[in-house]
Length: 307
Image 1 (tube, helix red, strand yellow):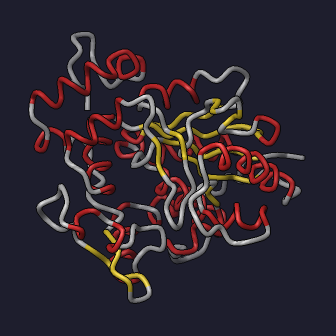
Image 2: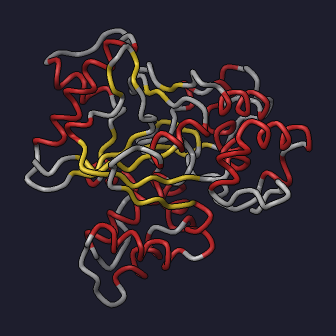
């Protein structure tokens, strides 16, 4: 059994960008792969329908975290056994034990690609995506109990704090691992993705990586979402901004099959926090995550942000 190669990240850190690159690299066509076909190339361990397949019947009410944990082990094994080859699966789970059950099944795991992003920018994207204030997002990134899911589409996923999440993956003993920083992908995408191709031992053909980089660029993904919508975007009916809470301004939307959804691809730039966060908010994030930020090049020797 080859097993699962995890594509892991804290939410809003570039996971979808890497999935789009991989899809375009594998297809190697003359036009971009549709963003709505990405789940066909890299599945996630969050969608509820995989858990329904294991159970054999629809889930009518949200599973408890323990129920989810028990089923997740089986779902992960299902992913691993379904293919004769390595299966790449997206996850936002931290590596942890809840109720003495692992969030990532070690028996099904072959290795991982971990994508990290400056928490100063993660806080902005997290707030916009989940419909909360910057202060609330900063609080969530620092919470050891932070989690996602339990919705009509997604099961419970355990995140923990941003720092804990990073550590759980990059310091996991014995894990075959390739780490990618969002910032390196922005600064020199061809170089960053060429290293990924090398790690995955994919065929290295002239122009193939560059074409996949072009077809998975932020501009390409944004144009696709504007024209056809994105199946993974949050439906507007589920978003707090449309319920009149916390966000004063309704985010931009794009329609997918006639349903308004919150725009998934927002800015995709480095250092947007400099124009959006107060000095007090920046100080809080650095205080919460100083050690891990320093270890991965997000702070200089004077504890000043690098990006």
